[in-house]
Length: 253
Image 1 (cartoon, rainbow, N blue to C red):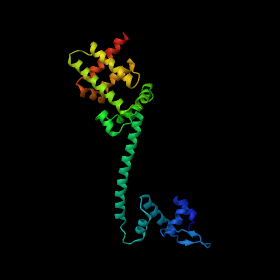
Image 2 (cartoon, one colour; image 1 turned 135 degrees about the vertical axis):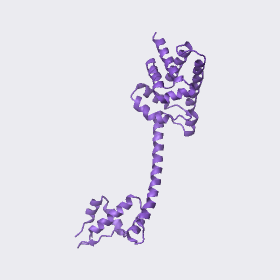
Image 3 (cartoon, helix red, strand yellow; image 1 turned 180 degrees about the horizontal axis):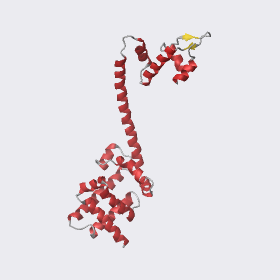
Image 4 (cartoon, rainbow, N blue to C red; image 1 turned 60 degrees about the vertical axis):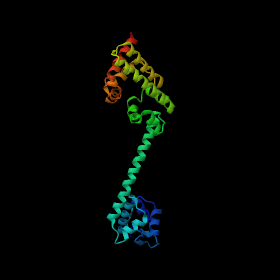
């Protein structure tokens, strides 16, 4: 007797309305009828429905599916090849969209609400968003991280440019101390280490001496931080670490 429309809808996980539509356009006409005139689907009809749903999953429109199933001259391989190209292009586009959304989410999490042009102007080749997820994983539970998030969330382009100018000025003066031959335990080096600590406290989060010591150790332990300082001046990462430690000892004394 075959299968009722309700049974087929349950098998295939489609709606009864969909099956009625396929029947109406001649895409899937049931092979039989009950005595009361109700649709009855045969095993062959179920096989055809399976093919229809396969092509629908790939994004084929119904008229193309009808051609593939009913035209003896149709080349399924060619249709699949063309559909594969379209799907590949769509996947690439969706991946780009996902990356853009992810970048926007990370930027908001970091509080960096700048356009790409502004971010390049402020940060140059360094992209703070690349480190946003790692920063959240490493320090997300700390008061310092939450405080930094709150502060930077309201920063404008001008705020970031001011911070950048402060940092560049500090870099020049710290490199000059190194060039002078003074050691990291010198008053000049320790004073700049203290200024470095206060800049962090002013712009991002309260940076006590213990936190500053931890940062200083990271400057030499993490190759990315080391490279940042070494690019300014060779030996700067280790020199800064020693100056920070010396300044903390000076404060403790």
